[in-house]
Length: 271
Image 1 (tube, rainbow, N blue to C red):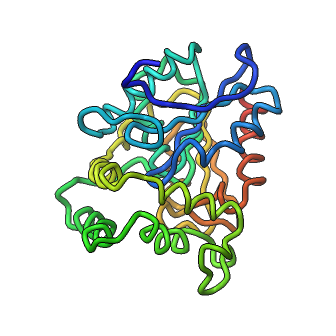
Image 2 (image 1 turned 60 degrees about the vertical axis):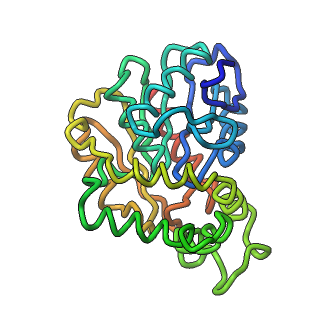
Image 3 (image 1 turned 180 degrees about the vertical axis):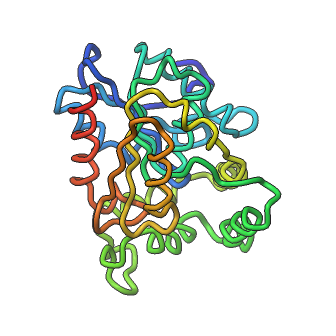
């Protein structure tokens, strides 16, 4: 691979009718979607999951922005040698998918926007500045990304997902994986991703989306509440909306089966 090309994992037949590309969130990585890649490969799909630039095995050259992420994604699609894909974006990955629609719509067969939003706001807004300050406070105080994960993971799941006061050894496997992914994010990448996140704005692009789209919410998601996903679906022509009960923002890590089933149902009926 080229030195600046994003790293990815994949499985499934290269000549599959439909290819899925899983795009992780700000605290994720390709390893968080390994089981999703395996699941859809077993059902006859070609499935890939990338490390965004700066994550895992993907180098970050230059600045991190949604424009640069969309360009990196297109380079990966070229290198992986397929023309069109269904992009499955979780959280910040959903934003990358929407950005990709504005950058290379001819490469997109469909969209699954999960636990995400079409906009965050302006970088200099009070809410955005407070959000960045709160998220960076632990790092600025000398905490590690593992300690950041200690605080954030329990705040992003459904009330019943973790016992009160649960520590990492007591986490169920899916949430232990989410914790491991977040712990592995380089602090400088996390800082850069947060700064990019609060600049995201693609609400105007929603009416232009002309491919099958699923907006997927988690019942207890406080980061991207169901109402945000429902309103987004209303602005995308023909889009579907679904809310997975009993999960929060980390939906696929909390309950993998309904997350996969929602995507499978969408793909089965749309492609």
